[in-house]
Length: 129
Image 1 (cartoon, rainbow, N blue to C red):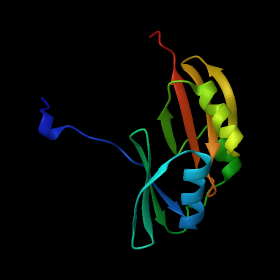
Image 2 (image 1 turned 120 degrees about the vertical axis):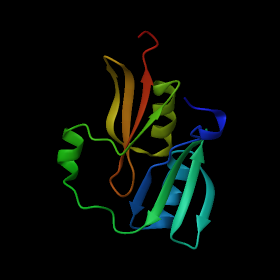
Image 3 (image 1 turned 90 degrees about the vertical axis):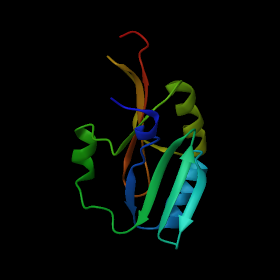
Image 4 (image 1 turned 135 degrees about the vertical axis):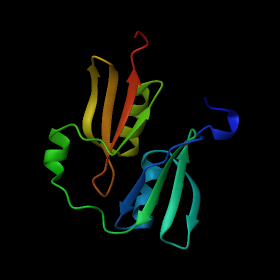
């Protein structure tokens, strides 16, 4: 049994990035996040609507990007209220889509790619179970 003291408050993926400033610019200018903090020039957090992404200056992991995308791999997934509206906003900001807006059995979704190749999913679940 959980009580209010042991409740989780948030989850934040920690992404290894090659250039912290480039990543901060991307998340703020392309995806609309705000800067939460920068720690000693190598670690930062961005936040939007209570959702956080932590960025750690380090070599991103080696991977076969085409294979990851073909398999529908996601590095982070955000639940959204209106996938179509958000996709339009992100497209106008210059975000690069790995998967364009589409309907799936569970709802509507699209994926964007960040400068280090991470795939970020935005999913609007169907309201019917």
